[in-house]
Image (tube, rainbow, N blue to C red; front, top):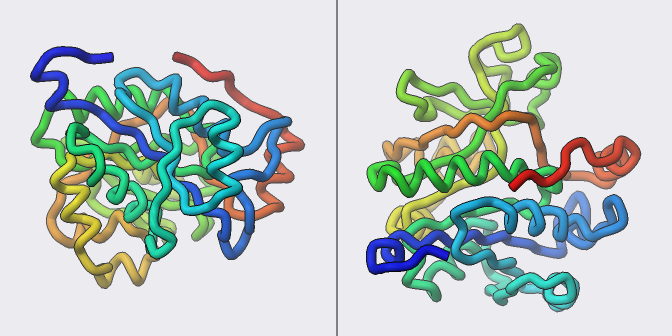
Length: 253
């Protein structure tokens, strides 16, 4: 735990938003993977990241709260009217004014890269001018980047995002410079609360990518490069494939 007045101003809060009623995969956070609820895998990997002062699971569901508390998580209830995970994260952040940096850690990424989260926190702590950050990595299988279900990002020379897209951006599937984006976001507190108040933008709606709400408004998003691919689970079929494959990497702290 960080101490002292400067540390308290730069406290880091991690929030894992979790909802039960996903249209393509109801009950997804509690679905069993390798003998434990998927949400528990995310929580364990996030908890192992260095630099987080607090880690919370945010939900509006009794079942998720009960299971999460049973495996030791700190849980906060949020409104069922939250339109997105980011809205849920912002609701928790409003209750915790000490949190200067807030991470949105997706509840459906059971192979979350702990080391990349640590690096993202370090980047946000080191430079308060970075108002928003995220994670991406090189994809060893270029063919995977042809899929519209895989989000791509292209970065500038400074390491900030130029654009995110579901399209085969910058010749990604032909070995182009695009990276595979991972759904982890870090915000300086003031930007998170602003972001949650903004209506969806045109690019966001066209691409179905919430981070473009910030890009459209001129926010620079720092992209931290992870060491290995990890992706979210959207369907029962993807979960079954992951179950059959088995865990690829241990938690590294």
